[in-house]
Amino acid sequence: RNAMSGGMTQGLARALEQAETDPDVRAVVVTGSGGAFCAGGDVKGMASGGGDGGRVATLDERIHAQRLNQRATAGRMHLMPKPVLASLPGAAAGAGLALALAADMRIMADNAFITSAFAKVAFSGDYGGSYFLSQLVGQGKAREIYFLSDRVTSDECLRLGIANQVVAADELETATIALARRLAAGPPVAYRYMKENFNRIAQGAGALDCLDLEATHHVHAGLTDDHKNAARAFVAKTQPVFEGK
Image (cartoon, rainbow, N blue to C red; front, side):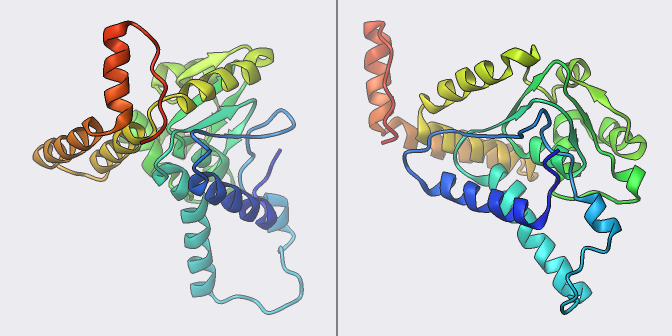
């Protein structure tokens, strides 16, 4: 179920870094194989001790490594200036839920579900899940989902605004590709500024700060070839092509 072993998280971090820095990548999809999104941390590995007989890291070293890991995965998904779509073919649990929440949008199979799962294994939560979930559903509902660790169905996720779309399981891949292609065909510079605007709001920027930031970004976007071409296409009633410049 795509449990987050060290190798898996390192591979995800490398893939996300490559996707963010590759100018040919216009949108990013994160999904899971085998009918699940991600079961979260490798609990079996934790229960077995997870050691290899070598030097045991200190507490400070473990905390720092965890911080770096979270920034390179959930943090990069949240901050990269490109649309990130999480596609959930099945369960997203624990840290796996946090990864899904770090994306800009989520599309779920109708038989998929989410669960924080943290309370069931006496963990407090990681990968920014408490932050991302609070932004989507508010503090009260987010605390309920964390404290009780119950399953939340795809229909309930759609109602709460956690999921942007719910589709039949056998249609998920097709629907994901269609949405990803729509995002990839969009205006990259405008998307970059949109994402920064929303992130600044989530980080507590006040109304005047947001107004000023939006003004700066809006004027910048208006100077791009993408905007000028789109304005001409609007008048001509044709479909614009965005090149990211």
